[in-house]
Length: 44
Image (tube, rainbow, N blue to C red):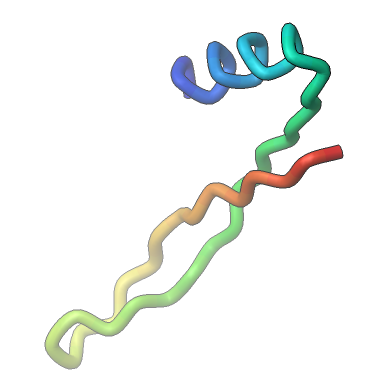
């Protein structure tokens, strides 16, 4: 989280605005289903 905040601040200095949002994904590990969080990064 801290890295995303710092990266956003750094990019804003160059006039680039990005947003981050979480998304749940299901992954299959050797037949076992687990839920993970994927962070989506998009430029505004």
